[in-house]
Image (tube, rainbow, N blue to C red):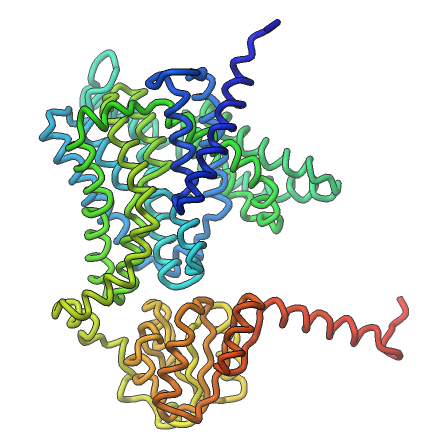
Amino acid sequence: MPHNVSLISTIAVGFGLALILGFLAARIKVPPLVGYLLAGILIGPATPGFVADVDLAGQLAEIGVMLLMLGVGLHFSVADLMAVRRIAIPGAVLQIGVATAMGLGVATLWGWSLGAALVFGLCLSVASTVVLLRALEARGVLESVNGRIAVGWLVVEDLVMVMVLVLLPPLAGLLGGQTNAAPSEHGLWATLGVTFAKVAAFITLMLVVGKRVFPKILWLVAKTGSRELFTLCVVAAAVGVAYGSAKLFDVSFALGAFFAGMMMRESEFSHRAADESLPLRDAFSVLFFVSVGMLFDPRVLVDEPLKVLVVVAIIMVGKTLAAVALVLAFRYPMNSALTVGASLAQIGEFSFILAGLGMALGLLPVEGHSLILAGALISIALNSALFAAIEPVQAWLRVRSPLARRLEQRDDPLAELPTSVHASFLSGQVVLVGHGRVGRRIAQALDAQRIPYVVAEQNREIVEQLRARNIPAVSGDAADEGVLIQAHIAHARMLVIATPDTFNVRKMVETAKLLNPSIEVVVRTHGDDEAALLTQEQIGKVFIGEQELANGMAGHVLSRLRPGTHKAH
């Protein structure tokens, strides 16, 4: 070769193997991410054959981290988090504490230092946002209450990990990292003070300046009509802010890119920014996972099989049970608890970022990094099976466990209508399932016409808000006959299912018609195929979101173009 082509060979072989192994993983119903990690293992120094340039792969991985965090920032919604804050914030913090304690405990028993054990526990405590979102989308529950709780939980975990990435470098010396000397107490507080001051300065700059500048820049670039310029603007902003924040404020690339995404979200072009940057984000995120795999030594599976099993048990059993217990403690139904528990039973990108930082600071041993990667590979591969087991496990628990039955049937003040509800809401009313974006507008229309209705909603916080406004509402899954009974479905005039989760529509309608054969049913759905099946089963009047939008727009266009309606300008 006339010149050095290590960059080209690393990218070419990395992408090629990732494509092949990712495809094979998808074919056996395993997340492609497992294939990307395996591709990295095959071209890493721990396996024979071609060995990619580890240093170059590390730099490519840093770009992947930036673009991954850009995506997290673009999709971060304070409003969505606030909608489930009462369960997501305390639940995520407590679950991180429990999982970190379990990891720290076993690592201490293995004879590791405090710093290594702490980093190890933190790595096991945070789940993969990428894996979670794809798992929820595949099951059509991303927009459901359970999906929103799981995503909100993950957002809190991500924010906690961002703070850990900020705090770990100044604390490394105290925890036994590679520094000249452990700082004194005064020096430690001074270091932390400087760190927090720099982070605060960066956040202030981004909130005050970035919030105004980024939307305007996106608007100016969008006006050119050039798609490639718009994509370039998004990527340049993410990488530029990440690099600048690291150089000027000593904060991580991840935090800089995250805030760049958050500021872009303020623009009306945020969805376009997310869509246009998605291919590049996907490509570099593949390289990120490949580079992570390159650092994995497969010998740990042979040399330390018991440690690997312990790690997997903490991730898939310990974290899951802790999350299930916490969700149940907040009086959410068993289905919500099992969904959130399954969502968190894996680790991913933040664990890799934190493990890499731990190694760079001399805190985490190579063995710890390999155990984390082994736990990630196994937990991600088995996560889809865990999701598939939710319904059978729930059914088994109902039959076999008196405790599970008591948990589902326990007294809950929000699961019953107050005795003070007026009689007009108990007969001839509309039972409205779901009070999200669609349900809220239907409720407003019913209010305007003074038509009585009762809301059945899974989100307890929404039920509390409705009751504070004297609107009759019950908390729970309307697929459970007890919830519809509490909404007095037997005497209702109409059942309106406005929830995006159409998985349990048939069960809701079946229960409603069993208790009230003459009830009228109205259902929303997203796709033509699903609508055709529901119509074929004569469930009731079915509305398709896209079709109603098209009808509304077409009606407006036709009304403007009718003879006599044209106005001269």
